[in-house]
Length: 300
Image (cartoon, rainbow, N blue to C red; front, side):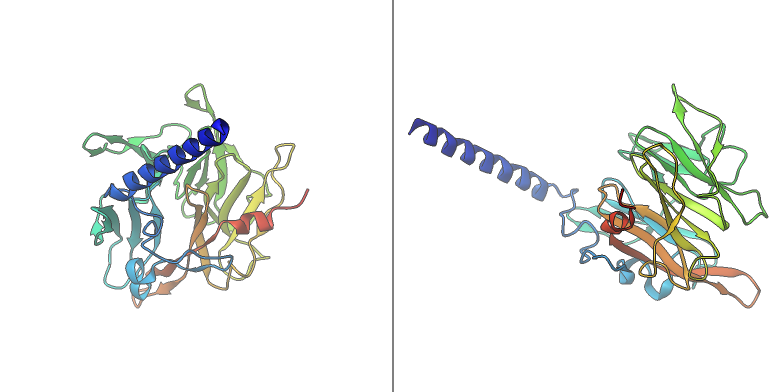
């Protein structure tokens, strides 16, 4: 009887604790509810769908975007339509709801684990009490190359693309963080670096897989999304095209997985040639359940 009474009390305590935790989050105006976390959009399944097109990409006015690790800010870019110059925007979750878009000085932010550092090419900013620091150089081995995309694993290893303009081939390299310093970059092998416009790597937190976009002969037209998994011996297996549910005759690029590991985001669109011969990217953000990665992973 005493044992049953104790179990009943324990269950009641755990229930009240869960309710208090839930209420704390609900009452926190700066904490997006699960329903609000992605602008209230219905989560996708295993087929990619457009992400909040009416909010971030009306009439295809979109280049690329990314949600901050805390889920409170969505950064994105436009350079098409009425935006003759590339313009950077942010939408913030404040006082219990998402606000309107506003321009921001933060360009192409890529966040560290925890969100205290953001990276842009071969530079970075630290979070301060008043916002973000000025841009600082990452130093060697990042300074002598044009970097469009950079991604970090949980142990600090960086994976990044590198271009020597006007070269359009590109390549993905990595650099490990050893005793607080980055080692010289190591160019990845042909499993990864085959094709043209090899760019925008995204490394898994545990380095078990690498995602990127590239134009290859076995693709569906323009740039496609590819994935490579790491074998038990540490080597990278041959790249796998992510298939016709994700890749199309259009350009797919800018792939990344959300910090909670639930969704895979990317951009789909095409280059529009203007009358003066210049080009603009006209596209839309897409998202899909990250289970697609496990469905592709080779069975051992």
